[in-house]
Amino acid sequence: MTVATAAATGSAEARKRPARATASRLRALGMYTLSVLVGLAVWQLLAMAYGSSLVASPSETLGAARQLASDGTLTNSVIASSRRILIGWGLGVLVGAPVGLLVGQVPVIRQLLEPYIEFFRFIPPVAFVTLAVVWLGIGESSKVVLIFYTAVFIVTVNTSAGVMAVSESKLRAARNLGANRRQILRSIVLPSTVPHIVTGARLAMGNSFLTIVSAEIVASQVGLGSLIWTSRNYGRIDWVFVGIITLGILGFVFDRVLRIVASRVLRRYGVKL
Image (cartoon, rainbow, N blue to C red; front, side, top):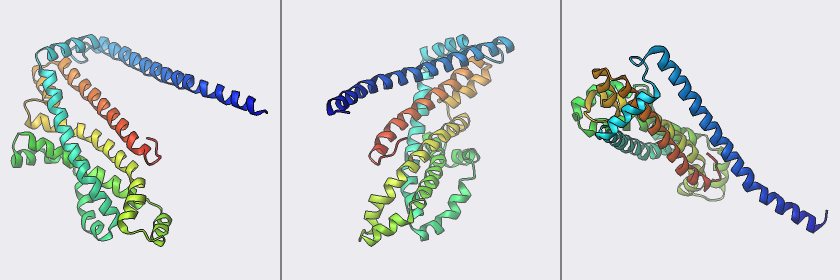
């Protein structure tokens, strides 16, 4: 093969790559659309089979969403729940990641903290709802603390697992080359652990949504959990569906944004999410 032929072949391949990427994105979008349409069809069939008193139809749910959005109830609920989740989850990540690094790297700290981590991470946040209200009141603090409790142990455990999974041969080689503890942490441990931190953060985000509903049902006048509970009291199944679906959409959006941000961070370390 001549140089000119090879160059022409390479140029043709380069032109095909964007077309393939576009086709792949369109195919993925088509599959998502098909999946949503099938889900809506199944939902409509269930509503027809069981009646609006048990299962609100897509059209009834959409109408209820418009009603709740028009008077500001839905918007205020989304803002309140989002704020509580982001603050509690963010604090959990900010505390859990450094603690996990210390637990994974320093045996003494691991031995001191591991009994508490292993004890408290098996107690669900719902068990502390009453205590949180008694200790902190029905304001924002009780909800934020419960979500922080949800997130911090998940991030800590995932981070420490990532640190302890670092290859011992890499650590030994770095020490032999004269690297100190800080250099080893920055150049070897942290890059290897970042994917585990991201995984822990995503899992913590999902669990934060589970916690917010329980916290808002018990001690809140505004929020998606409060909306769902209030709707139950009034017998508005369509409002309940609006609250549940809004939680799902909100969680989907939060996770997508987290994945986009995390993928850019991980790209620096040559890791794909």
